Length: 417
Image: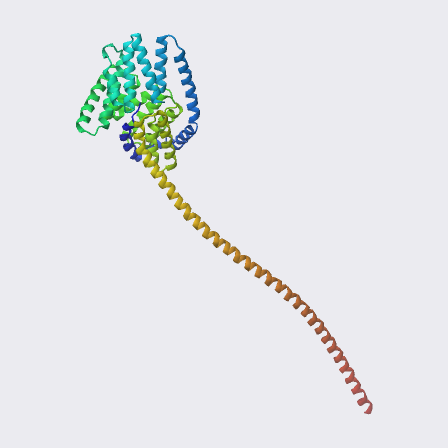
C-alpha cells in the first residue's frame, strides 16, 4: 500500500503553482465538483463500509465452512487481500492462517509468497523487525514468478522504509542502495502489466527526470484499471506524483481527489491520498473542508489500527487543526465585531426611530393645534364678515338717512325763495 511518507515530495511540489499549466488544466477539470463528490462520499461512508462488511462476512463464512484445505487456503488469501487496506490486524491474522495451511499442505511456494505478502503488510505498518524475519524465512528457490514479484516488492519496500525513516546517514545509504538492488530484481520478474511493475516504472522514470515517459506509462495504467476501483485509486495516486513533477497544481489535486474518492467508495481505511489532499486544500484556504478530510482520515486510521499511521497523520492533523482553530477564532472575532457594530447600528436605528416618532407626535400635535387655530380663525373670519356686512349695511343706511336729511333741508329753502 502507498506510504504516507512518500507523499512529502509530492506535497511540496504540489504546493507550487505553475500558472500556465494550471490555467490549461482548469479548462479540463472542475475541482469544486470533485470536492463535492468527495464530501458526499465521506457523508455516505457508513453505507460503503456496511456493503463491504457484508462481502467480508460472506467471505469469512466461506473460509470457516470450507472443508477442503486447498479451497480454504484460496479463501484465506482472498480474505487477506480484502482486509489488507481495511483492517491491519485482521489482514495479518488471515495471512498467518494461509501460511500455516500452505506449510501443512507442502505448498512451500505459496507459503513463501504468503510470507512475502505478510512482510509487505508488516513493513507497511511499521513492523520492520517482523517483516525482515518473515522475509529471511522465505526460500526463494521454490517461488513462482508471481511469488518472486511479491518477495522483491516486499524487500524493496522494507529497505525503502528503513532508508526513509532512519536518522543515520550510513544506514540511509546502505538501505537505499539495497532498495535499488531489489527494485532491479523486481523489474526483471514482474509482469509488465502488473501494478507493482507500473508503480516501479513511474518512480524510476521520475527519478531519472523522464517525466513525459512517466506520464505515458501513467496513461496506460489509468486506461487499464476500472474507474472507482482500488486499482484506480492506486493508479490515480501515482499519476498525481507525475503531475507534481510537472508542477501542475490543478491536476495534482484532481488526481489526488480521484484517488481519494475511489478509496472512500471502496471502504479503504489505509488512507494516503486524502491526507495529502487535506493538506493541499488547507494550503488553498479551505479550512473547513481540509479539517473534514483530515478528521475522516484519522477515523479511518483508527479502524485500520496501526500506530505508524497515527504518527504519520498526527503532524498534518496538528497543522490543520491549528489552522482550523485559527480560522474559527478569526471568524469569531469578526462575528463579535460584526455583532457589536450591529448592536451600535441597532441602537442608532432605535434612537432615530424614537426621534422620528417624537417628531411625528409633535407634528401631529402641531397639526391638531393648527386645525383648532384654523377653526377659530374661520369662526373669527365669519364674525368679521358678519360685522363687515353689518357695517356696510349700517353705512348704507346712514348714507340714505343723510341723503334724506339733505333733501329735507333743501326743500324749505326753495319754498322761502
